[in-house]
Figure (cartoon, rainbow, N blue to C red):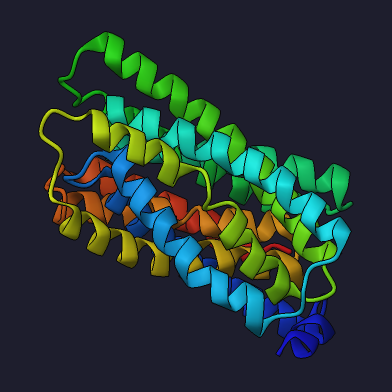
Amino acid sequence: MSDWLVSIAGTPEGARLATILALISAVAHAIFGALQKGRHDPWLTRGAIDIWLALLSLPIALFLVPWPSAQTLLILAGALVIHFGYKLTMALAYEKAAFTVVYPVVRGTGPLVTVAAAAVIFHEHFTPVQWLGVGLLSGGILLLALRNLTEETIDPRSLKIGLSWALLGGVLVAVYTTYDAFGIRSSADPFTFLAWFFLITALDFPILAGLRYRQMATPPSPMPLLLRGFVGAVIAYVSFGGVMLATRLDKVGEAAVLRETSTVFAAVIGWVVLKEPVGPRRLFLMALIAAGAVIVEMGG
């Protein structure tokens, strides 16, 4: 499987598979974000997800994939730091503002920075038509966040803090997307990188969640939380694993842009599951985001 993936990287077949993986990752990531913002405390939810990621990844890393090289382990240590910063900002943002406000800000900031970084690091270049698509997608996402923002009724100070964390989270999305692409491309076996990535980057938040749980006056029942964590861990494999494989097979910038169609799916989830309002303007912006992604994909 690994040899086949490596062999089709940079080919038309690899590009098609990368597109499919990026879009599947978008759907999965929208569900993943909604899980963290659901009825449970976002810190506890993320901790429960990471507990399961570590438990599920440990036997895979130890027995089913080749062992990582010293260089891969060093790269993974950097990934631990970057992803911890991302998870921290997301928990802080979700703590302060609504899912439909936070999520579009994070996802709208990421593609612009990622595409620019990929041009410098991986020497990828977008056509003018593709840049138009990036502009439509990111612009639509940020306008969606602005539209959601006008309907917020929470304390203005909390809202500003939440938005600040969301903007930082968007920058860190670009950082980890570019860094993870470098890491999986540097590893001889992509599945070795993925297995050890999920194991190592899941070691931090269970500690924070455990400390928070012990300090709560009325902590929630652990079983529903652990069940949500298991579902989130499975979705995380699809979301983060899918987009990393996409960046291994084809352009980092295109995979990053396509993944941000997750904002459309997130808006639907926010409307249907979290009962957050959706109107015709928001539907128009969702269509604009989707159109931007299509232009990026077709304009290359």
